[in-house]
Length: 324
Ligand code: PEP
Ligand code: MG
Image (cartoon, rainbow, N blue to C red; front, side):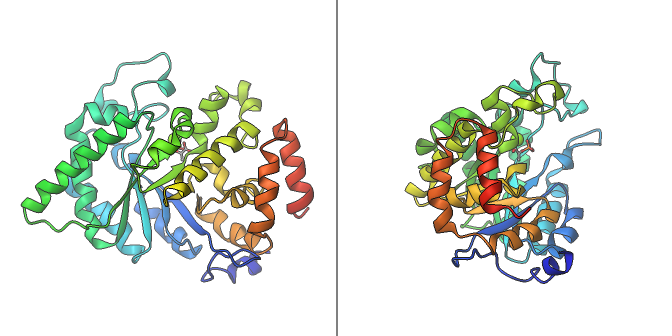
């Protein structure tokens, strides 16, 4: 099997009926790039920038960040690179920010909520991203967006920093796509509105599942409720993809679900455009796609939205589309 996968490193990701989807990788630091390139990723679907801020005692400077972002886009050699702005808080702490302890950190002051308030810190990151944009195909993604106001505010700050840099004579790409993570149910439900104001969506199922099922993703006691194949989750995913396509935008997924062999046939059938996963899942996924027909799965996936339970969905997918 390993040998069969290795042959697919330089191949495109196409289904049995000739449909192309993008298989991209999730990374945490530029050090992960070697694995990404060796496994034939067609892009980076999620660069988690929080690692640049962690394990140190002060914020990273604009130049330090610029160097990291530039390295990633350059080494990806023109392939798309989605860089997510700082998603700190929840389980990821930054001691030097001295944030107050919260009763419910996963529902608290984190990610874009914190960035919009500490806007000096946010602007520094945005400037580093804008400066790196002229070295490859960089896309910017905001995490934990719950309302249109947050999106508009983040976009306004980005536009301000872009104007400043341009006035300073710094080269900034004019083709930067700006998107959001869809990982909060309010955003999935109102995806039709968000789709008018973004260039793309990336569905963050790690959080979307925990918030939809009200089951902490770190808590073993309730892990039985953490159900990626629950019809409610599939319905949200379906809504988000349809909303994106209606506005001519693309929809990806960067949660763990995107690389899962049971989920892949469902997501393909729902019309997902980009699947971003850990590098080691890419070749198995590419191999799996070769045996799947997108057209056939479109009908099947819609049927799955109307089943009662996650177990039924899983059993139906296994029976029809997953080799034993
Ligand atoms: C997600 O929530 O699905 C996601 C990809 O982000 P993270 O796992 O970093 O919260
Ligand atoms: Mg998340």
